[in-house]
Image (cartoon, rainbow, N blue to C red):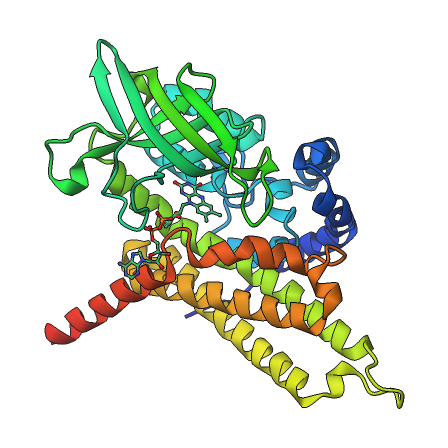
Length: 399
Ligand SMILES: Cc1cc2nc3c(=O)[nH]c(=O)nc-3n(C[C@H](O)[C@H](O)[C@H](O)COP(=O)(O)OP(=O)(O)OC[C@H]3O[C@@H](n4cnc5c(N)ncnc54)[C@H](O)[C@@H]3O)c2cc1C
């Protein structure tokens, strides 16, 4: 393992930390009470600043206009950005666009790259990823009801999706649909680009999640595909390759989430320590930080955060060196370890803030509401633990 940080990345991380502190954290009070759409003009100004600093799209390929950072380098950048919910969006490395860029870059035709990939990397359009269905278990995504049937030169898509993150205002959806129902289980589905302006692509609603519908990028859409017709040239890769491509997308996608969560852990940890030092809880001037329970939480959080960070950087290093397939165990491990570490640290930080923690006067309640989902999306804890355990036991059986 070699996690040496180059001077260049060290400088970039410092620049990002300063930017997040000076430009993004001050916007959070507005972000917490306003509709996200209202923030778009000011966020565009911040994005122009990022472009001028030459820090735009850190993890996207250089040939598309990104910085082309390795996964390990992006891990360090992503932790710095994750300290604010506005970080990744402002620097243009946010999910689900990041994963969609990877798919388009890897599998897109020349025309698809021109029409979708290039403007996406430039930040002129946004995208979404529609796989999970209302009536089918997302934990076993081979069970899909959405179909794409050939008719003339088109596919006609019918199905009911939800949790299509950021569908509101997106230009296109990469959609998983069954194109080959007679094929073997893992060869039945394909990925198809569906412009959201296509008749039959219906955004039914932004789903209220933990009390918030959200809007634009910060939302999760329910989509009804009703005889939605797109040309067959919108197929990504080849027919029946959808699950293989989804696995390719989800591997690095999971590690991207973990890197962002580390930033959330650090922010919550810093807030917890500050409050513990400042909050006086007895007439003789004793602070919360002088209580052993709080000291335990701080010590445990510091240790758990550093362990999660090292596991994540190790995963990134493995993927950079040997590819995502070789790092499968490591990716499954960090997905549930970092999600749970984050949930624990945010919960402790909120508890230390008492009533203040429940308000939107700090960012903690936002993290508490929105990041609970980390234990569910891109594979629930139980699914990752089960597949990791199965692989461990299989290896042992095989001696
Ligand atoms: C905030 C958020 C954003 C999302 N964004 C997107 C997106 O952009 N695009 C998209 O397509 N999807 C998205 N999803 C959907 C997400 O990937 C699914 O919710 C997830 O895969 C789980 O599927 P499910 O909700 O159908 O739960 P189910 O599959 O019904 O599972 C429910 C629960 O059962 C348990 N469980 C399931 N399988 C097993 C097992 N084998 N062993 C033990 N326990 C098990 C787990 O605890 C799991 O949480 C998002 C979800 C959330 C919450």
